[in-house]
Image (cartoon, rainbow, N blue to C red; front, top):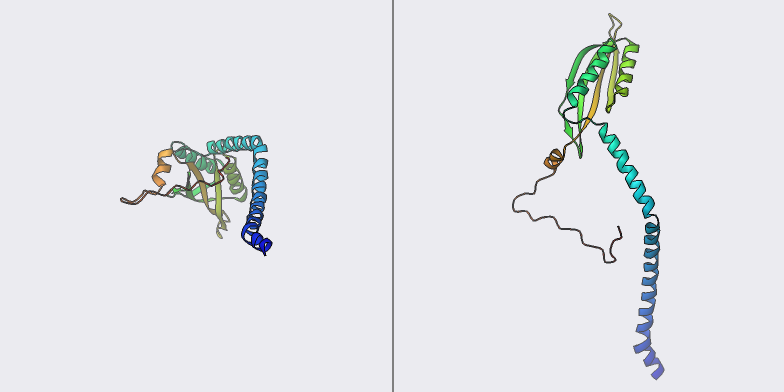
Length: 190
């Protein structure tokens, strides 16, 4: 009876704690191994991040800034006129701001022959700045046989820092500031 009571009141709880701590140890070992793998690969991750920043910078340089957009619009019209196309419509629409860039759609309608249209689209693709063309509709004038192309050319512009800040939602007066995320108990290794 003494052995049973001693086991029940003293040892049983300790065995349950021991099992729980062993499970916790296995979880901590797994966390340690995953963080060790991240730490071992940290130089490679930093190198990859630097490469991504350089590539991102290169891509951003292909986006015109505010002062370059008018020149880009001229380049687009010159590409069409240089190929012998007649512009029926060239209408830049209102900019559509996104997270860090603004999209500038331009409605275009040109007339010409098949090869001139193809060379015009090729010239747009060869511009040093990013210009995409979509929503292409090609039709033929039944009387003259001349092709007409309606399309939307899109160019993009990198937003200046003050423009990005203006896009962010403003906190309402009297509203509480957003709560900061709580730190994890194990501490994050970044």
